[in-house]
Amino acid sequence: MSTRHRIVNATPQQVWDVLADGWLYPLFVVGASRMREVDDGWPTPGSRLHHSVGVWPMLINDTTEVLECAPPAYLKLKARGWPAGEAHVELRVEAEGAGARISITEDVVSGPGRLMPKPLRDPQIAWRNGETLQRLAYLAERRE
Image (cartoon, rainbow, N blue to C red; front, side, top):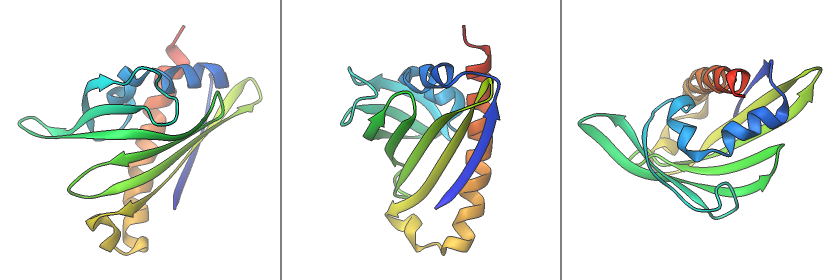
């Protein structure tokens, strides 16, 4: 699994408030282009985000499902990105001084993406998640 970390100038609750608003995901998740629907109860286990990935007009509709949730510290997701496959994504938020440390761990769990050797897929996932954490930091640090 690929893991990235970032220290942000926001409290764990401020970070969680961004994560708990499913409509914000396309603003920080690299590859997500739009939200179509957010299930009531997001981010409780079993709830889903209905999103699209890609660039118009080549959009693919898919979902991300909550597998585990422990506010404001932990969120485990099953992100679908067919035709590439599915990935498990874990987000951890911990207090770090006056701010927070956000960790994101991800790996492909099924589908054709699993065929790519781990030493080749990890750097790509790490790059993507580094940008995702930067975007998440911008939102959390500026959210009132």
